[in-house]
Length: 327
Length: 283
Image (cartoon, rainbow over all chains, first blue to last red; front, side):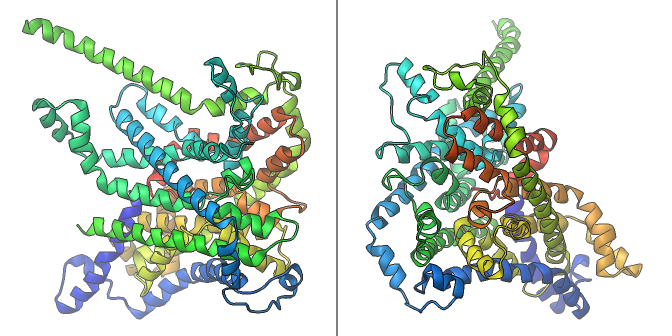
């Protein structure tokens, strides 16, 4: 996993430069003593991307923060003279009747998607790890849902879940279940978008967990098999415990990316009906762009709450990853 | 007894593999059913669309949906192509030098920068979109192709820098030192040694940058909506909103919009797998 090698690659560098001054160290540390000219060259190469980071990440984020702290109307949005109102937008958001449902839906959506994506992904990874004929090809085909544009997946699922003409209700009818108003009934809309999102997320879990399985030595399984451990037992006492580090990474990364899912929900239900599938991501968009009269301030405030949540879990992820490298 | 057991083992082994392959085929078919359904609906006639139960195969197949794509969606597809290619160029141009510097030149503060890129990947797109909207409104860049290219590139640049850094760390230092001995400056070294050796990383980054920009809906709908040049994702979105009846046209457009992903999966599968395990960043 390059993602993990990326951080370690820089760690030894710092030690090396420290060691280089203390003692004539291994041959590799000899050349880079961070000469000034090389520093200049390095930052010349980094200048474009640093400028880019400032202009197209930091500045939009700053503008978003600014939006959330002022009372913007359409007119002051264009003219840029909106009065500073402090945390008023955040208070509006907290008092909004949509807040509690949106929070609940975000939590449920994220948790349920993660559990199913991980469980299905792990089961498939173990299955494909048995290297039968065609296994590599089939595993590659499993990537398809992950590669398709989200609008394609979302519109396909919309039509499959259509109340009258969808294949899902037709299949249910065939086994004697009454049709379900998947997208148009408030009690089912959240389930529908969760199903679609699980389908999209399984490939990622499969691929990452599969690559994790490759690092478990096969000798362990042989020894366990000799001791008479069945397949189920071998999974729970070898695979699952040894896969824990990779599982932690997969789940945390999945958490960060599931929190911000927007396209699927917006295209399938627009967060409706009656906010029954609204999450923070779609609520933020709804406030900022979904109405004739945009509420940029509260929209940005909701967005910033989402950023904070994503960053908190993101930092936890980076910490876990780093700790794993060190141990 | 023993001879019988050994004689039987190979056949049993083959039979269990056979069962696994069969199970794998069934699972794959289940997983890909929505993709099949998209194809099926794209060939279905209008009058069969509301049939109950829906036809499992396009028995009376029609190309009307694809004709509608040719008539109505080509400008959208062209816009997406231009934006995708623009995003690839911008992403590689920004990220390749950065990866070289972070991997080989050991800049002071490089660690912080690398950390910032990891964090940048985690910012929800919808928040970026709102910030971009506010900025583009002031600069008059809304509904412009360059504006959308820049916004779409933010999906790929952090990932690209991480890939390039990881890849270029693997280039032997002796090679670069030899170049320096021969009097090559960092720029020459980068252009004539590092970049040619990083072909695989360039391919991986380009594939993902193109795919994400081609698939982008958030930036398209906030920054390009209603403009003269809308990408294909908006083309599909308008279709869904406007004519709820012609699902064959909608699904035909979806099929066409999926072509890049399919081509990439067939032609460059190993790069895709490398990219996913490198900390896949898509939602």
